[in-house]
Structure formats: C-alpha cells, structure tokens
Image 1 (tube, rainbow, N blue to C red):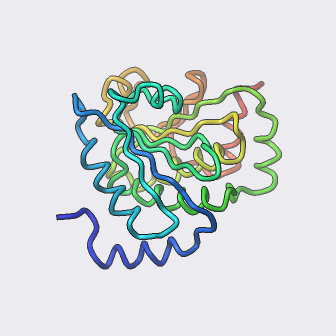
Image 2 (spheres, one colour):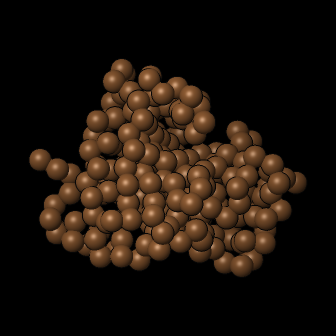
Amino acid sequence: MGFLEEKDKQEIRKMLQEMDSPVKLIVFKSDANCMYCQETAMLMDEVAQLSDKLSLEIVDVDQEKEKAETYAIDKVPALVIEGAKDYGIRFFGIPAGYEFSAVLGDIIDVSKGDSGLANRSRKELAKIDFPVRIQVFVTPSCPYCPTAVRMAHKFAIENENIRGEMVEAQEFPELAQKYEVYAVPKIVVNDEVEFEGALPEPHFVKQVLRIIK
C-alpha cells in the first residue's frame, strides 16, 4: 500500500505540470539505525512517478560515503532536491505531514531555477558572500513549519553560499536538545542566530542578515 491516494496523485500531477526543467530527487538512506529511511524512499518513488521531469536516485550512505560527503549528508534519512545544480536544499527526516507540501513547492522552484523572492530580498541576500547554514526544526504536525522551510530553501536557491535544511525534531532528538527546540518552527543560522516562528519574508531576511553584521 502506497502513501498517496489516487486523488492526491491527480492533484500532484497537475501541480507538477508547472515544472520547467528536470529535477532529481536524491534520497540518502542507511539500513542501520534509521527510523524512516525505507518510508522516505518509498514516498519519493511515488512522487517521482507522477512526472516525466522527475527522477529518483537512492544512495546508501554506508556504501557510498564519498557521495554522502559531497552532498554534506551527516544524518539519514535525507532528501536532496537537485535541478540544473545542487542548490543546497536538504530535508533531514521524512518530509511527511505538512512538510510534504514543502517538497512539492521546492520541486517547482528548483525546476525553474528561481527562488520567487521579492527583489528587495534578492538584493539583501546577495550581500552574503560566505557559507551560511539555515536549519529549520519542524514536526510533521506543525502547520506553520512548511512556510519557514520553504523560506530557507528559497534563500538557498537565491544564493549559492546558503544551505537550507529541514530537520525533523522528533527523528533527531539529540539535535533538538542541543538547540533547545521547545517550539517549532525553530530556525538556527550558523549556530549563532536563533529565532522561532514562520516569519514573513522581509523579517526572515532581516534575521538571517544579523549574522553578517
């Protein structure tokens, strides 16, 4: 039995018609100590079958360590959404529940190679000329989390120095404890700036830019 019902597949097929260019879904998994690796691979396989412009690659991190290192994958399950290039979009943990919508939105953005951000945001983010890592801690039942995840991923598309990561707090409790995640979404930027909530685009940009001042 699959994850997606037929009515969901029809809606997703229609949405994916907005894609411009091919997109690859890369799932990193391990057969050891991974709670949702198999489920993540199965879910992405179902998605990949809904468009001719989508393809799926499954990578076993135990057998392909170099590839995992190349994509900076340090925990599994992990999902990379790659278009003409690797934009730095990462999902750590199964993108289920509300987070599934973020996957679909990211696929469209990556296929277009465009963040869709406002011009002012683009100009502000262009000031970042060093590596920035935005971790967005989420739970599948959080309706506000996908907005924050999408924003981090749009920033990653906009500036190659930025990497945007969704981290499912329940699957990685040690990280949730490290960053004192008591409410989601919680955003951590380069281990220096922390804030909570799905902020509007201008405010999210402002918080991220705090690290360069």
